[in-house]
Image (cartoon, rainbow, N blue to C red; front, side):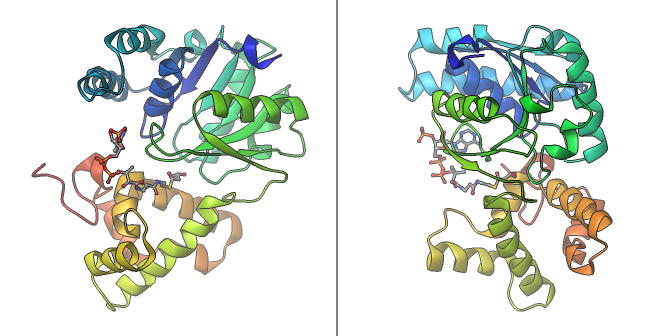
Amino acid sequence: MKIDDIKKICVVGAGNMGHQISILAALRGYEVKCSDVSEEQLRKAREFADKYLPGRVAKGKLTEEQARQAGENLEFTTGLKEAAEDADFVIEAVTEKLELKRKIFAELDQVAPPHAVLATNSSFIVSSMVADVTNRADKVCNMHFFNPALVMKCVEVVKGPHTSEETAGLAMELSRRLGKEPVELQKEIYGFLVNRILSAINNEALYLLDQGVASAEDIDSAVVNALGHPMGPFKLQDLTGIDLTYHVMIERYRETGDPADKPSPTVVEKYVRREWGQKTGKGFYDYSKK
Ligand code: 3HC
């Protein structure tokens, strides 16, 4: 397949990442079908698109015609088969649970056309952990976007030992056509580049909080004002989701058995209370009044 043959993109999962990847691709002229098992999630995704596109027109960032065309390019559905059966490129963006991803990749392999690339937007899981359930491992790779996907420029493309040069090349070129500045990892490593660095920062911030050294607000303020980050580690976890932090750490701990990989007491407490950040109205900060 050549890059110009990619016309239809399927995004699996309409959550934090999936809905924005879908809108991004629709804005760049691709026909996008985004699937999710949750009607509620799809409704929220559609509502976001219905607000976001006219908002961009009002801000002078899009013409009315571009917004209308993007809206037309975008379809939301609960049917995975319906979303994937004519796709040239599939981006999976479901919850960070390995067994779920393996189930979806096995299904995608059955329903997507044989030429379609199957990419995972996983935050940490390398694609060789899902490629083996397909009969097209050469067409499987990681393509990792950052939150908010409509804004952040980086995409990590990870070439697994099974991934062909052609597939990695297509994922890199597609990222560029989506307006991103992709980086290519020549070998698999858990957490890739960015989340390995980010995890080190988050773990240290959580350690300082759990030790009572400073408040979340002051740690965030220090990171913003001393290091020039756009937001501190706690505000950022509220954006990416504390449920994500929890799931990623639990999965990692199950795999390694290393106590250092256990989620911190604060993360466990927030997870259990459903204080997952912006998406539930409360995380390290309170969003209920907004
Ligand atoms: N969705 C879509 N667009 C958004 C947005 C959102 N949630 N939030 C902000 N934007 C857009 C605005 O529309 C605006 O666009 P414009 O300049 O073209 O009009 C632009 O972003 C700037 O927005 P604001 O002026 O309102 O706010 P800020 O300047 O504070 O920027 C931010 C907001 C882009 C989120 C910035 O704070 C930032 O870069 N934060 C760091 C985000 C980050 O580190 N992301 C990576 C997280 S790690 C990750 O994703 C890994 C994964 O595996 C979990």
